[in-house]
Length: 232
Image 1 (spheres, one colour):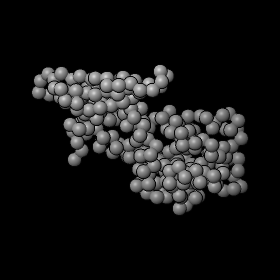
Image 2 (spheres, helix red, strand yellow):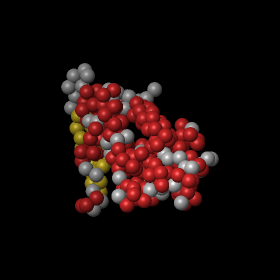
Image 3 (cartoon, helix red, strand yellow):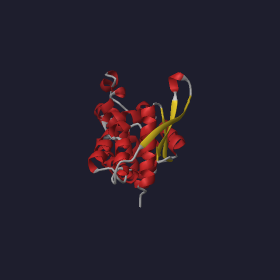
Image 4 (cartoon, helix red, strand yellow):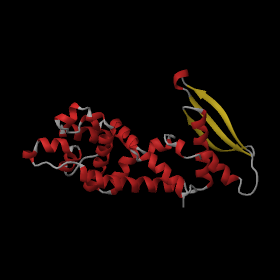
């Protein structure tokens, strides 16, 4: 199982562990350790602790740089949505980590492989193992492959209102008319993609796309904010 896991993450994420024992530990649940005490294995709980802290740091810095005008409260709310149990469980399943976790028979029979809390812990444990094995740059690269695209695609836009933020920036010195113009729609009815421009004084200041007009508008506003407030 460890060999198959190693091959998968090497092929999919270009990650090769220098210390395979760390990878094995990350995918070993306490229930498996308890049922195989004679093997002297370590479970993934300590790695989970480390991965949780490292993930918070990487996501915090990314949001700080991506949204230079966003207040602390909104940054905190968005980070919480990204690193919550449900989100991390989904990331773990997308990475197919659920296929490789070592579980005890009781945990396996109670459908533990699908439990959000277990998958969340597994994802954090993998991050902890990767951090110990290869340091922060490798961790940032992996998170950049798995999580950053979801942030950029608007998966967490419900947590942050970019349209309001853009309005606040543009109207500091008086009223400014902001228009969101639908430029085109693509795809079949069940999977439409909407494209929107945000226009101020006849000039396009941001573009966005998404599975709904709302998401496309928020994406356009987010791009406009990044252009108006570039990171230093």
